[in-house]
Image (cartoon, rainbow, N blue to C red; front, side, top):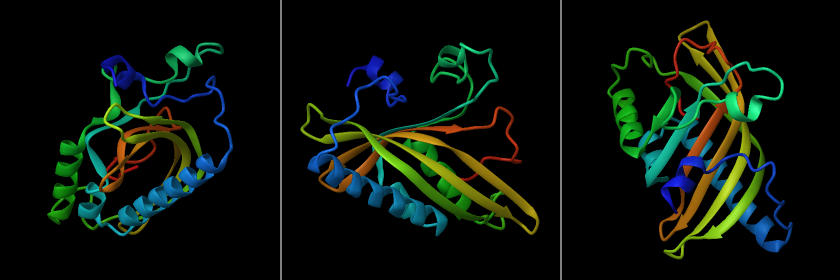
Length: 197
């Protein structure tokens, strides 16, 4: 994949032609849904080391900031762009691994005691199914999430948004290669972003 394609993918494919709803689509979607549900369970159960094994080594994990903009300017200005503007997250597997290690020390200031988190994943749709030059199948997937976080005693936060993923089939199973998270708040209402999306 070219650097230009990587910088823009996976983007919402509103204008892209809809994939044919054939047997390949439904079989692949079933596998992808199970991958996403397993991922949610690993994170909710705080099995961060196992979750890291489901991430591709070249992972791009990005959460743009969202702005209120004038009507007609949403496509160009509603979300910050990777490598061009500020963002909530712009990470790879290494930095995510370091965040997991920090949480697992038990002395993480914002995650001690650990948050209680419950994730719901829905509206899973495949946007593209491609075969890479290396012969690996890559699937662009959109989904929606609702995440509940409870901290200490009375702190409660809800995160609602969309995810645009690229998930790759490898010899070791499906791996998350790219994720763009769009949380629909232009001002963050939580005290921190210590959880994973």
